Image (cartoon, rainbow, N blue to C red; front, side, top):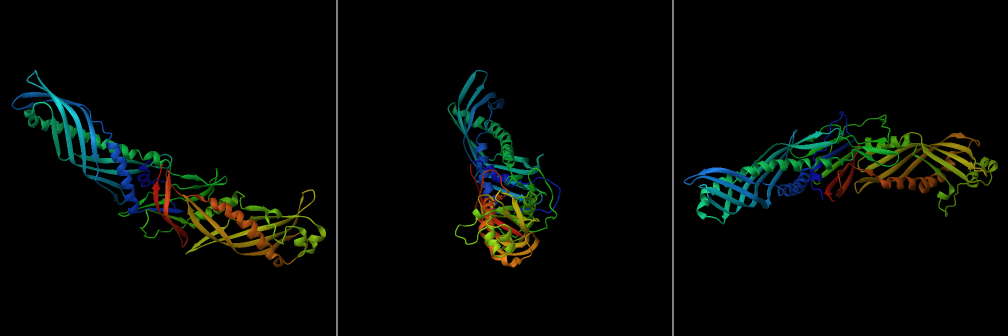
Length: 473
């Protein structure tokens, strides 16, 4: 497990050209507390790797004069960080504080005095009241991903007690102060570099931020930051672009995101607000790619249906079809004529689509003969849900209205075909749409992030995902 991943989420902060975001993310105090717990576990493991160098020197000790000493084989046998806190500094960054930490060390000592007298033994040092304070700054790298670094780290070693083993006991009290001073100084020099290393270790995880996440062969969605985060005493709010693009072609849609604000909810670690702009940009992309079209043939109609895609069925309503194209199968081309529009209202998602239906007779030599073209205005209701770290959905048909655009078989009453096309849409088109929506598209994430206790609300002009987070692997 890489416990730095969650702290990495604190730093989603590249700096891009300012614009209204399509997606907003709020990290709450509950999420920050979770980050602190796994971050401290990582820091504790890092501090246990401290390598205290061998120490040597000369001190004048009354009444025996100069004493040469060396401390070797110093190892950490125990280390604890019982009290720690991450605090948000509004408009600045993150403050780290550790108090009442303790370290236990073991090592060997040797001394020489009066030119020829030598003594040696081992020692145990207990350091209590260790405090560390640091500030974490957040910047953007050349890829638009965030990087974090440590500044203003200060480590203070509190009280210490040393026990000597072996050697002349009368020397202990005379010499302990010098050993204590040397070790405390060595520890203080080691701590802040290791704290800085722990923070820097988050940067490889930050590089896993899906700034540009592939959806499928047609589309990708961009989650780069459009402004620096808003940091308050209780949360960090991020503004993400949240826009779909055709793969390899970033064309802006003829509409822009409108401002929206997340509600002051705090029960979950993380809140993701996705505006209608984001989903509508997806419709723009798929329409441009020609992906919102479908050929419908008779084998897509359930065998039990009395309505078949052939000239006999349609000839009952349009006699000219049966007359000119007797006993032939038919094919329908259903496609959008412009990008669909998605509306978010409280507890309701509606999609309005404008399309066309072109009917063909399939000649014995497989040539397609056009029969008629209908304009179609349709409305569907959508149900949205989160699966894994993806947003998925399903739609149900509300209504359709059709008008005749072109006829190659004479005039006819379009209304007479309503039941046929309602059936075709329900049994052939809607299942295809839902099969695609079931796959979903990726939400913004870092590393091996799982969403748990997830809830989704549809509000005015955006949806709100409240979730807790776990990192695995």
